[in-house]
Length: 208
Image 1 (tube, helix red, strand yellow):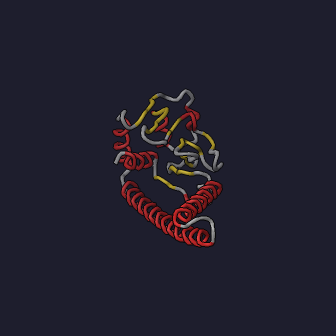
Image 2 (cartoon, rainbow, N blue to C red; image 1 turned 90 degrees about the vertical axis):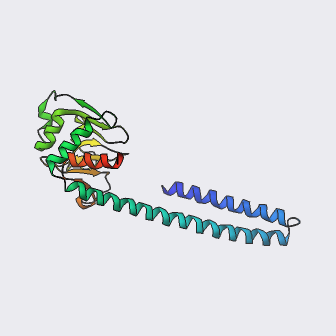
Image 3 (cartoon, rainbow, N blue to C red; image 1 turned 180 degrees about the horizontal axis):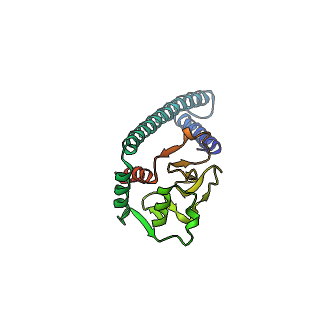
């Protein structure tokens, strides 16, 4: 959430709390006077404390849920990374053959030279597939998008994912990274040993 959105929500919450306190004071007193303002202040304090307790609890629950999801993803990736390359490739090719899960366009490249900077495994993949797009997600591997990353000039872009995320590789390397431009080093990037491990992880997340 952006800072501007957070401020807007805080202002709206404060206005709502003040309005609720004024309504309580109006209903429970004889009119605007000393007792009205006493009830107003007390109501605003009680409602405000309740609001803080609620939002704090939701924030903690959200943080726990995010941590649990991250742990589950890491455990899943550990299992996937241990899959031998040949087996990962066979599983992915079976998944790509399912039109209910992936949209695939097979066609040889018009200019094979566009793949020269890729590692052998990636070159073979993009020689076969012009485009691979998951149907219930945002991952899109497109031969036509291969080129320098717009987020990090060290890498080659081979596709895109949710929002501004790119799928990239180093020239001549098989490891696939997910980046959004915020990473300061490779240790902060999500990395997969090959394009097949990347797609296998994606498929198990979307189609468990």
